[in-house]
Image 1 (cartoon, rainbow, N blue to C red):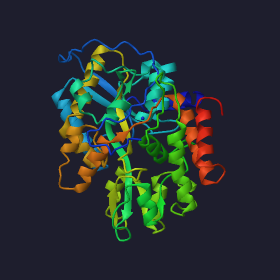
Image 2 (image 1 turned 60 degrees about the vertical axis):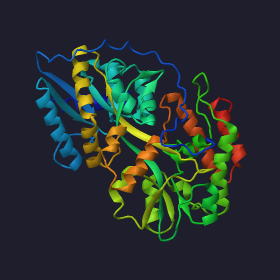
Image 3 (image 1 turned 45 degrees about the vertical axis):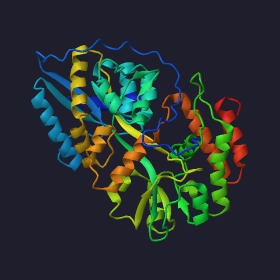
Image 4 (image 1 turned 120 degrees about the horizontal axis):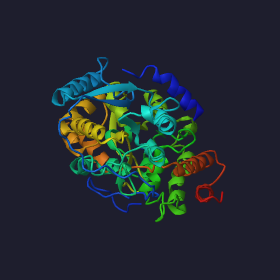
Length: 434
């Protein structure tokens, strides 16, 4: 907190101007983790959108990727949209304050510090990773959106994006961009993408994915495999849990892959998909995981790339959706009305589609994804994946789960434990017995 407050003070000088037995379909309802109840501020009453009688300048705390300007196609597209917004709403102006996306000095750090010590300088709108929502909700820093943002917009969000924005049936965020993780493979070496673990082991090709963890927490791959096997992350009371049987099965993939030399011996060195792309580009592996934003940006440079869903135990379609979202902070009704106007303006399908295409990110609205068209087979593929994506609980108490899962991966890949032993340790660690 002291570091965040120090950074906040420095920044103020320049701020004046988140086992299905059958293959899910594109409309499948996926398991939704139950989250603990959090006391929330009372939502504002239905807001009036009468034209403001005076100019309202909205402060937006954002990240470099989502800021107007002339430096990139995304910045230019957003710049044009902001200008159009101010023409449509001449009394509403936007003041953009760009912060880093993560770590000390990021939007979430400043938001929590200001909420505690300097609420007068809080923004009206902030851009957060949906993985950061839990901490902001727990601190009481966000305004609930029920009765504020259109229910039509909420209903059109892909299920994972909508579910990641809810806590105790209250809506707190509007995700506006997403990415998912999927498979790419060298089409000159592999004729047909493996759908199941059996397919993968039968092909005998080397497969790489992030296994080294993100800040000590498990990568998406293990979580995807565990959830696809029907594993739960929370019990009926919303308390974090892990289930031993599906976790043992998921971890057996790592043990079998290590034993059969399907997985690289240095798999724990791969912390993220950037790392595995290096191995793929060098020809060291024939298959690897990739994020959708990386594929969109680099597919012309990748080596013989073909895309496919991630291989799972029984071929069930599964991936993890990650998103960034708008959150509303200011409690004043007039400012909330102005913030609502901008968020709903930007989230109109044609604007969302235009910006996400320019930024190389995926839309969170189904109608916006439809506007990407059908000329590219990849667009149909990612729409299907978005409709089948899982999301992760973002509340701080789930960190223990993600740390325990990464410890289990490490133990299995190093031979320190069998899948069953590692799964039991992880289960006990989550419930406080480890």
